[in-house]
Length: 297
Image 1: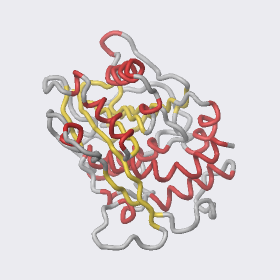
Image 2: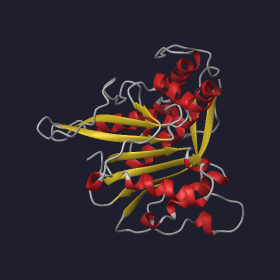
Image 3: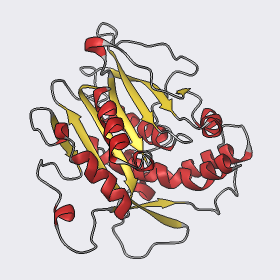
Image 4: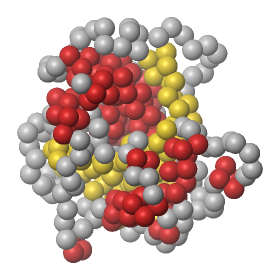
């Protein structure tokens, strides 16, 4: 099916792009990303939880909006896991992840439930009302906003996502590293709340409130980044390390195991691409909402 093909072919490079954006946003060394260090949500435990100061547990709520097959969620699990190891101290709380994946496509949701069974999958985001409307520590939109088209729908969706970010939380937007993807990221950065220092703080890639020089300049140059990722074997040729399920989700998971290795996700320090290496080009933005502590504090 098209959903299986999407999971198999686009999953690992989307994961690599989201990992790039999140490691830069939270100041995590990509070399710390490993399979063993992933922060998994409790399986089949979808009830809303609260942080417990007495037990030293800090619940980190993540919304993956337009989750597809779960590539951004996998990146969040890895990056937050690396953050948990970095803050492994008796004086700091233990992180526990609660993950909501929103995907309107039924077939992609079906694949996603196999790839990331720990998440709560739905067509729409779970919402709160009143003062607790914004309760997500991280809202992630990977390769999804650019599909909305006209400005009215785009701006309404972005503003809605921002309202779901709690004070101190982060909105991370990842798009393709081409003129269209950069234009979507620029439109997010141009929202009133993103240009007001009292409302927000730009975390990455450029921590300032000025206009993007790439958007203001002339010519056909746009802001984007190149993130290498590794597929040591032809995509889908090995099912080792799979979580079960159909062929596409299983091979998709096996490719994550190769793509997530720290050396593959770190910036190249030597010339040459090497056999089996790929590069995903991306444009991205990470914005923190003022008024609270970081989700990783």
